[in-house]
Length: 492
Image (cartoon, rainbow, N blue to C red):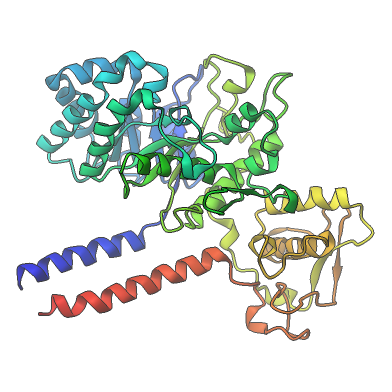
């Protein structure tokens, strides 16, 4: 085979890997926990929750041993207090890699090293050693023949971006330009991701009412409260996407493209002090449930629809030793006794099939006599923690009716009911819904359970194809086209 053919095969292989891999949701495990469970107990919790990706803020050896032979992908961290030593000495960096990475692979599936955490905004005196530390660690990985398996990057805070909205004009704080240029060059040359700690909770609180809470929680926005980038006319249904796009725009402003964004921390506190009303269980459940569903649908962001955003949820356990207000100690989804703060699944529950034969011809619809405020509350729940597929009732979609909350809520209630009835889901929603045998489908808006009696096709009884499904089909078609182009070259 010619050199050209070999290059084509390599390119094809990489494209196939890209298409086959999807975004994932992992979890952070912090160290500020007074009664942290044993490493083996933590790994048991990860397995029970079906968590396949974990970020350690350090390189705890007991955890690395416990994670061996589990298949769980591990991100280890160089703590901020070790950064100066690693960045000032090549032998120290090599010793760190040998003791904390090379000694545990391949049994422990270490795939990333996170150098520090929000270094430039929390320990600016270490800024000058950030890039040298990355280079020294990369050299050590190369020497250990681990440079293809283990990637390197450093998580940054949103505070690195001077003005994050509108996303299209976002730029990095010019104070750090001399650091960010070689840093981005390093990421580009090594094929690593830009790590971003994207916390809409902080964005919402600091905004002091500029953005609605629904926008921060991935909930449906009132048509009069739609958030758009005035420069691109792209609509943002959630703050998370706007933050990620702000990072892409900031890199583009420095003439860097093609560096993927990985979110290394995102979550919501479930308890706060008297002056922290947004930190409660309902909001934490809504945010994290919607975040997981949003990431796993692989739909990207408005400006980067084909770039999937893998995300590490913040965090597994409450860190009671963290400084700051009450909310800072209460981001965990689990208590240290292995009980859950609230129920959360790390699987994409929104992709479950709604076409239940036993429910054909039965519909869960909104009670037209229910107060609109009660319907709105039920709608927020079902499209949030309830994990109904509400894509069809978004602006511009086939079931969107801005002035008819009964119709909109009916679609969402029915979708939820058909997805969950077999596992105990009901059609009640605090008295705002009822069962009906009248098919509410109309035009291209097809309700789950429809038999086509209202002119709709029974083939669509599982509901309309969402934008996320279309994106997946597009990607599959794209790969087919690439195959058609490259295969003749390979065979030459």
